[in-house]
Image (cartoon, rainbow, N blue to C red; front, side):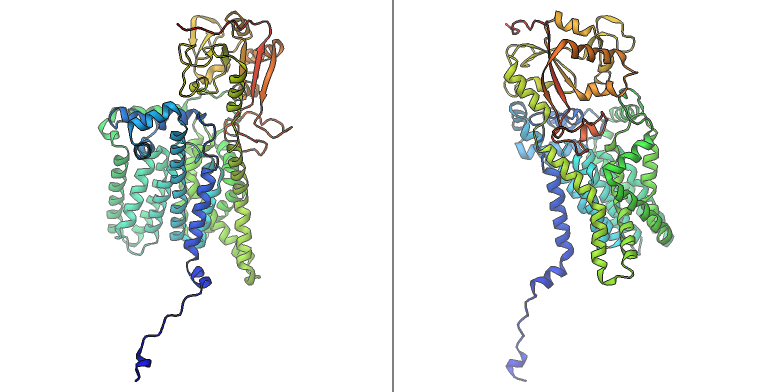
Length: 590
């Protein structure tokens, strides 16, 4: 044999198209993650330098910063501290620790809020990738991609990825636990430890981020029951391993649940009581929690995705009841429990959306296969068309809300107008739909008021009238923001005039609650009517498209801007100048 015959042959280069086809799944997942992240950071600086969401403004970011001033005990467990610890670590790296983040937050808090919101967006995007993994393990690559795509574009996860709240971050450990449960269900030998550890760690981290994330426990139990059919002793050992991993992960992300157990129990109890508390429901458009959540799924998840999830459940009931047991009981029990509470909001649904995405992927796959039975050559076109139809609502509404958030907030517009029009030190009546810092010039506290505010504000947290009886209270009654509308009386306008509070700022977040239930607060209706009669409307700022009708007050849509009529974030704001009310000279502080 000649040397030429024995020499190694040069490798024929793989054509780019063939290489791409071979790695199509990796490219598709990468493109999906990029798209999901873009949807979550477009408009991420909305409202800056103020965080207008009351929960965002008061819960996680301030407490993450506060930890730099003491030990790592959050001293607050109404919400679990997992996300707070993540933000604390991010701030330590991003701003260099206590001095850097404190200086930034006091001089211009925008970079701090943006860093926190980007962290939320990253964790929410990770959830998309983890759900693709879970779907791939259960049903294959195509179904996994579709499940991830549904989560990537669904309205609720996209909107709340723009907030430094724990709702969207909780999706990541929930999806991690689902991936582990999928591995347990599909593995042939229950003794494989990795999947049990993944499932348990996901459960523990989900509970340490948001307590209701613990609903994923039902999926793990279903997977364990399936594994027990194959090898019961091994399944029991695996379940014990998952339980140990869950406890360990929970304590790593929430160590003071053990180190400060009494405070932890008090916090959890307070959270449970708050969910069951009927207070603050004035303006609620839906009195039935189960109907509310069914309605919220139609826009927060989508009509067609919800129908596809129902179809997927039917398909699995006929083909694979163990997978159905893994995916369906969680959402049903979650809605049954949460709907029985006295308070309900659309975002509280988010822990069950990964389950519904997986069910919907099954429904879409089945429908596409049925439609392509007689058109085999068009099966990919048909599958793409069905998937596109199911994704369309989420894409349209998520892009819409991103465009809305990228525009100037009405509350910022109103403040700019007041800064140009009303001298510092004047007296304003500002309804409690704004954070306290809104009245301050960021980084430059005013010397004309004792509080450092640019203007002196009427104390809306203390009313001359009792919110329940309407009787005058010597020294005033303490008022929660939820009860503010109940304290409004026409006589207050006389109080404004006597105190030389000549500017009154009204927001639809408060006035809308009264207009939604006028029979409940007739005195508040009379107050607004008298204000309109006896004041000049000096400025108006609308969040809607030109000539669009206002969106009626709603505890979800008034704050998440889902209706396409919204053009910018914020409530409708009316600024009145009381007739016959002396403004008086600017307040002087010695």
